Length: 516
Image (cartoon, rainbow, N blue to C red):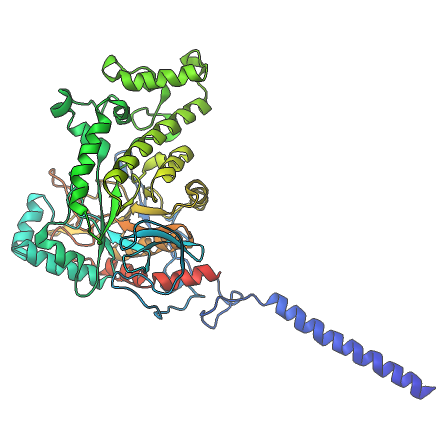
């Protein structure tokens, strides 16, 4: 009997011990968070994913600089402070820098030129050799036009050939894979500098340019129509409905597209820049489409007025007082749709090789659903100029994903300036243009990395273009630190170092974020 009791006790004791061990192992597995593959020895329980930086900045607002603050920048990310990420360089690339080995789907564009594609649920551009590319570029790569720029240029370089040799090396060394020339009247890179800038060493560089369709029509109105457009009195989008607009841009595109025929370095065309589709809370009819503004147009612009009047009639809106917010948004969407449909059809009629890159939506236009949807409906991607934010807003990125549908987006302008930039020992005024002010060039690099790391988390972003190559210098003697080189063409090494680090790590960072 005792032996039976003892065996019974031993059985249940052993069973209980086994359950305890199994339960303990199970509990440990549940509490242990998984770390990304390729990460360091730290786990999320040891360290947070990021050790954030506080980077001081100040805004130029209402004609004055505001106080220094870190209110919006206290969670600044940099690569060196990513605690779960280990860099990798095990990637095969094309001469364009495109990643080889990804399987593209949903490809749009002509074979042998730049195209848009999806690879593993992420948007890319495909380069002419079928590599998957994320754009990391610089805008306006050309000598400065002020007297100060010209003086320094002549002393330092003496010729455009010498300048382009040095600049091409700067581009290649910092893993910049896209540039633009950026003339007000679209032109290809001049022959004297093209090879040095677009094929430095063994690398190939892509570029894109702006047709400025509506703006050029506005500039040429005096010559073509006998009167100038008053841009301070009317929203320039009323010019869409001018009887001569369609034929004018058809001739313009026919002429300009011939400059890029067969050019594999050329990604494609922006249609215009920062058109005034929407203003903050519809407060300014000159900066945003306003139905009441269109209805009040004078006889000279009766085509646009009649378009608005027909909109009212078709919806049975009997007076201006009866216009609702929804009516206003619907009208804005119709005008945007008309613009994008007409312009893209015109470009495609003359150029079947290159992509259409949107209109560099700016300010509140990029936050407007109907405008973004109209752009995505007709263009190959949606381009936005992204200012007045330390980093992309999470909710806006989610909206872009919904509004763009299957189309990706590109950040076509962004930057911040630094207080430590000087010319002949005198600090820059730094009041011209967008972009916030930080303390140092190193802080500019931290801003760049933070902004771009967050863009890389968005799987429908195909890249970004920093504004710009050269620091600005106004006719009134005020300088602004926008460039990767100073007014005296001296590279900002403390800024370029983090820019280069991120540009080189793009595909490694994508793998990290896509595994999360």
